Length: 122
Length: 332
Image (cartoon, rainbow over all chains, first blue to last red; front, side):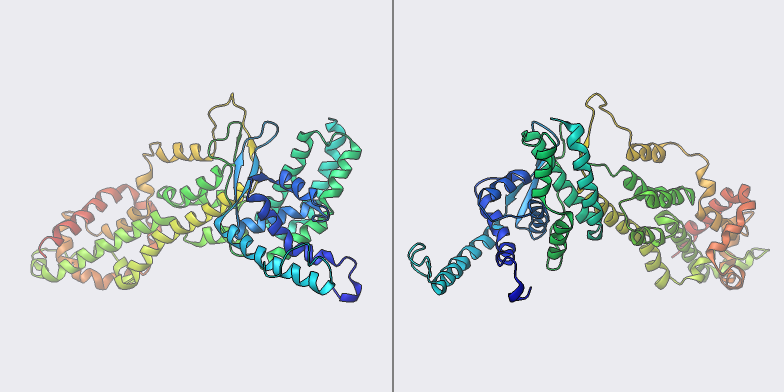
């Protein structure tokens, strides 16, 4: 996408960070797809097309970041639950550090939020 | 909830998604479809989707099928080889994962089942091509590695072994030969057609590779079946007759007519015919000479299929040939 014609500058950014948001949600709970999408939807602006989460989950499973197990549901067919793996946790830890730096850098350049997010290189 | 209103919208959406997802290939498309279906089912089960308006909201939020597929294709660029696709639980209460009875049956016929000469292997080939879980390339692989299956190679290999014992004995027992009035030509020919250094590896490959191919294809079929939706099981039908069970009965049932149809018998009989009368002595004396004649005689072991009409004598003659090999190996 050319810089000049970007309709929504956050599209690319969103694409890059969403999988780490999924990993973060999975650190506390094992979730099935629908539940996961709902939780992501609670944070405004994270997800636009909910359906795109499923290819993402598929990719994360193949990368070994999440594992899946099937569980019975009280209504309807069994559901596929996602759990974070050790390698997924590593990826999340790495991203969390990088993201803090990145966010602080952007905030610093934009002249916003320096005070809100604490010291740089936190 | 108004399934009559909800379902057509959902089905239309899934149809469009399935069509758009075609380029992803069977594995990925199956997994994607299963995920989206599960999402919709869960939304309906949660009660938040109950009429046309709420259904449209749900589908709008899921997004345009083309966009979802684009996301999947985007990811396929740098997607790692990854881990095998895990299936549903081993013993679901009311759902089971899709079976691969057909594929297992096909693999069994192609390998173990090939003892039913030609017929067993052909059945395997037909079943392989009937499966929708294998690509054309995989089906070709299963068909071409190797025609006849391992059992076919085992009988050929048996023939080679027989030749080796017969001909080697001729060198040590050569003095006993002249005592026999009528020279008898040979025991078998295949050892000359394929010398051991090439024949043994070939037969070993013929036995082992089909098993490996069958194993790999079965694992792929299993993985693809797991990507499909679980199948609802009626608890009242406890036992299920699938391809696997049918194959087991076919393979375990008595088959009295089979020995005459085995390629090894036909093969040996062609050469064994000459070991008539008191076969062992004669064959031992003449085995050395037999090697020469057989070079000109029957250049290809598969040519032995022409021995169909001689079947009534085959068994006795084969036994003679076997005895011949057994006794002559002793002096060494």
